[in-house]
Image (cartoon, rainbow, N blue to C red; front, side):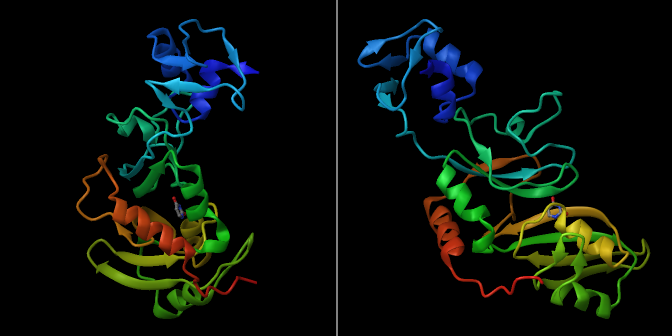
Length: 248
Ligand code: URA
């Protein structure tokens, strides 16, 4: 048996705090009875729990794309009170979770959903969903170095799988280059570590594409709902076989 507000929060209704408000407002029924007190314990496998008349587990699925600013944590909550990505979803009442992660200092495309199965599908390493980044680096790495990133480079957790790498822009005045890189893995700080390995540390990193979905047109710190077609395309992308050789 578990507390009702915990069961509701885990079913993705809202945060635990918001679920308490939902209970005291009389919006929750357990086995046909309205429950407004907070101590009530329920068995989520046996009790029939409804919020606003709708059985939990049958919640509307929400899929959003956020243009994450840098300086924000990819997490639903932060015990230290720092800015988190869900702070940028003012119109979303449901509890949504990030699909994978972007570093604190990385900006750009982040997907969030309350559909656990969808998130799992897209982040599972065996599905190799491609992710494209724009990396700004100091200096102009020559072609043979970029070739190394393309074919695979040794990192402390092993060789990287082949990647697509090309120059997007070179700014001679600032001595900086912007390099577009697509990776088929999702290791921790992978892009930054790949560039560090060729001694061209990243000074700015932005994700611009996730599977078939582009960030284009979405202003920084704004979000929008994905269309059903985009959700379908993402699912298909995850289920497509990418012939990615594993790094050795
Ligand atoms: N690679 C990184 O180094 N950082 C990210 O946030 C994403 C990919």
